[in-house]
Image 1 (cartoon, each protein chain N blue to C red):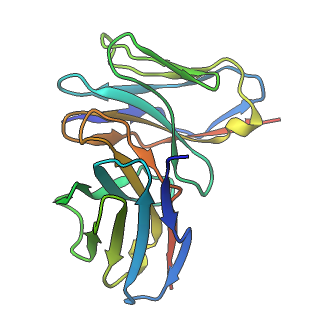
Image 2 (cartoon, rainbow over the protein chains, first blue to last red):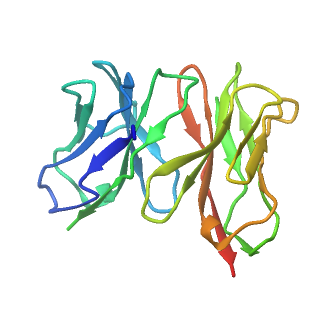
Image 3 (cartoon, chains in turn red, green):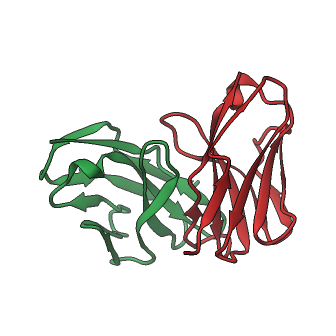
Length: 113
Length: 110
């Protein structure tokens, strides 16, 4: 089945230690998104890629970076995780930006010690 | 700006009860509307969607009708099950972005 895959499902890191989260998709969608979701809140968009074009949300901290080496993969890098970065990180894809369905992966739960 | 407003939860129902979760939106243009469901510890799953006024989305016994005159997209189910316990997010997409509501937690008791 075509899908969005996130690895790992659970990630534990130490305060200030860089961490990378991975997302891959078999839908061949042009757009990949990263969201941060804290407990009992709606997902918050961090950034998205349309093909190789990177689009950062204005309020996304510089501590968060992303890479998309090819159509299938997208990575979220947190350069110096703080306690406030502990959250669920959701990857999503869509064919185009805008009026289109987004398909989500299962998420990676990040714990910062 | 564009936004989605959902009724606050949690909503607690007994099994086989009727469910309504209210959702209203503000948008310029002609957005698409969605309901996503999130089970504990999981990502968001698309439940249903509607792309134009008067469209009805349906899936797994859930329904929602795109009402442009009332700018609403309320989620309904005639008979809920314990397995429907989850958080439900209403969302809209426009030319520029996806907007989520704050989510409504549903608890269904046996």
